[in-house]
Length: 377
Image (cartoon, rainbow, N blue to C red; front, side, top):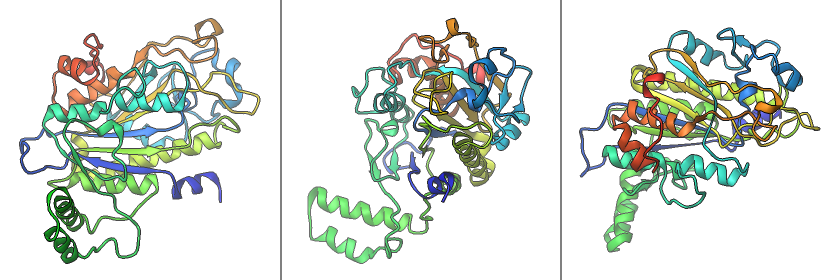
């Protein structure tokens, strides 16, 4: 079994939130957000090589795809990202380069916590930036997960539901759940009642686990009249310290999986793609230079992908820092010149209709966060 086949069968996950719930506003904002978390640190220079930078080949010749798709005279696109390239050609995708959450200590655990919490002190927040935005937009709902992802945790509680693959779990005995609710009281009774409700509502959901299948299921669920407004999909294994490859290496295979996620989200969403923003996020980039194991180590600046009908003009948003040694962060990493929280804020503004000032102060706790909505959307 090759590594891509292995990844397709394990490790990936999807979570939904923002189902309409009785007692909350029914006048929900029309937009939808899908966050695709690329765990491990995606190499932005492999995904979107700056082919117009003369220092690219000097710094990492063995890590640059030979068949990169040219998207403009300065930037190319890894050949595994053909769906994304098509979306760019139709003005329904954008790229943000040399960007990162402002975190430089290169720890997966700290970096992933900051990506989800939106707070720059690791492990200091019990809520996530998307969950806080949902609270402000009046969206409550359910997280389809064994453990609610931090990014969608907010002050408003979320019921949990996770479609197990255990035999018989797709058709639970509702009568038994009703009986258990009747013979208990308080929180226990409420739990059994809630379990009966969500089990019956979601009995027909597919029990998929690979990223491509999860993306299709997420899109179809979000297309339903009372479906979720927010989805989170995790794609792991981007931590390519060895044998990273260029055209056909493992990192390129992972990018192919991300491309499949974009493709199936659009297929699943159908006409609602026009009112959706899909965004990727990763905890950090990779080193500019190849290490001794034909891979890369933890870095700083990386790339973010945006797709969906809410994007009206294809672009590569970048304040390019250069790849000379003196231009690199600590003389080893791509310098991040864009705070990716600003991109997240723009996606919230576009999809949920919140004011940027409110997003900056109450979602990211950064009143001076740059507004980039008009550059992207």
